[in-house]
Length: 371
Ligand SMILES: Cc1ncc(C[n+]2csc(CCOP(=O)(O)OP(=O)(O)O)c2C)c(N)n1
Image (cartoon, rainbow, N blue to C red; front, top):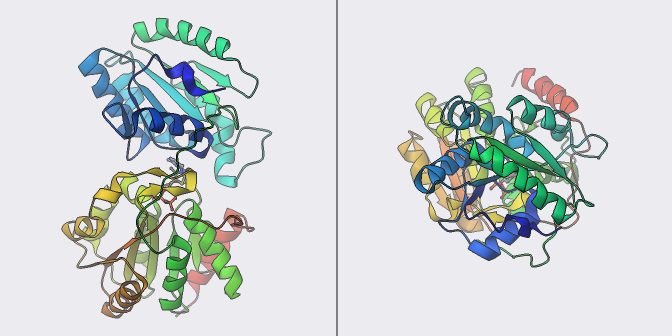
């Protein structure tokens, strides 16, 4: 089904999801990035933005998200939108990863099992859109939802895999020259044997896994933050504060850095030594289809500097990257490196073949060894 049933709405905000690629492509083609379509830093921000839209217009906003983002919306739904507070209507479009019975990655299993229950707990009526759902059924549901919105309530469509289609797929690209996997390879070349890595959600962790495999280095040095997008730098901080003798490389993305950017201020204030925070900035949420982030137009290294990182750098080509890696490593100070990157991922990129529990055990074992 095409997402055209949303034509009656004129404000959309959210965080992209691969399962909602048809929807975001449709929105991008129709509105671009504009006052009618805002890609938010995280799903909670999107809910607040939607609330502002309603306050300004009296109309019903649409918020789209992967079900991983449900946790981020609980606070603003319960304490801002809910009828017991301001009673602000909102339509949610939720991509259902980890639906029971459908194969998916470990980080989606529990969230997938609880998705409908969580919406019910938040008193958000939900209708599941599958491959065989008709547009007439969805429009009729929307008719019922109008009553809910009129009373200041919220409602949701939960979207199954391949349920939405949109043929005119917009292509995005950034202007960088280095691809994330090549950048990761240079970082691995610069690192020492005992160094630890904490990598962000999405392709970065998958590429790191495959690079280690290709190099025959095992996976014990790497913590792969397969879920919990935006939190890898805080995980890395938690480790660095307890293991000041180990060098910690945190591999962040621009989307994930933006998602919980307050973490930068906390890292800057704690200033652990030997902590190298690298944001691979391709200006996109590439792992879930390549929708743009706002990081293409912001200076992440200056933000880190203002947050108290004593050393910051920005690299746009391989020479600058190698120089920066050498200098930051030698300095043994908290550092931030923004690497301007191109979008682009190998077609045959696989997924980690070890489970998160195996990853945790071998990483903790590696961490417990004396250096
Ligand atoms: C809370 C939450 N919202 C959305 C997602 C879906 N998601 C997975 S990776 C990703 C994009 C990450 O973008 P970025 O950090 O810039 O890295 P890139 O994919 O460009 O390498 C998104 C939105 C998620 N996993 N968790």
